[in-house]
Length: 251
Ligand code: 9D3
Image 1 (cartoon, helix red, strand yellow):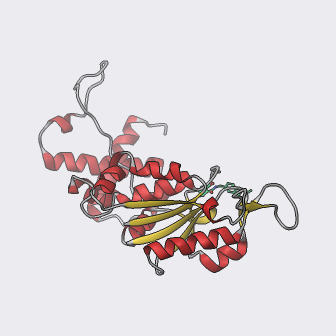
Image 2: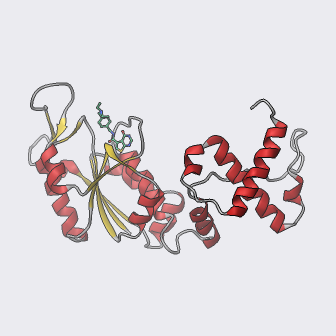
Image 3: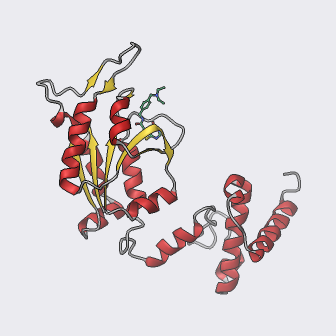
């Protein structure tokens, strides 16, 4: 997967390939991140890429020409058919489905905005999709693009050393994880659920699934609404909730 990032802070975006899973992916050649400095395409001595908004108002707007030249350079390097994405608070919400789509796209180009926004004519003529991480305000698209590169990289074949974790991740999308415990068995007077120490893997898997479904029901009912649960899952969830109700009768 090759990602061309057009940004005012290429040295920040490049950090994504310096740690963790994306570093391993970059070292094995599965991930390539090329971050281009938008100022290199400004065409003026001061290397400016922003201007005051027509119509007045606060803040600055990114000019279309440097962006279009940077996109052309990226396309020349990675192919004219690479989709052009823009990180933007106005974008479609990024999710695991988008991560999957990006992981299956060999080359893609992303623009990180700064300032108040980007000239609308550039958006309309050059950008295929706008992506947002959610309804909160960042200072620019750089941290957002690092997040989506990370999410897509985990899905590349051969990147997660333990193939089981990738498969587990994909099964668990749409529901929360189950609780985890590690040594010691007794920590500050608190023990670990007996079933996890039993060595009975069928019982352990059932406990984990019941807890994952139950936690999703309690903390993210919106997620659970989007899952089609098997009959067996319904039963596990009902058992979990009965147990929960008997522990916390007033909730
Ligand atoms: C009221 C005007 N603001 C729009 C919501 C201006 C504005 C704020 C923040 C314009 C750009 C930005 C910078 N944010 C991003 O570039 C961004 C972002 C975000 O702020 N939140 C979640 N996802 C993303 S992706 C890119």
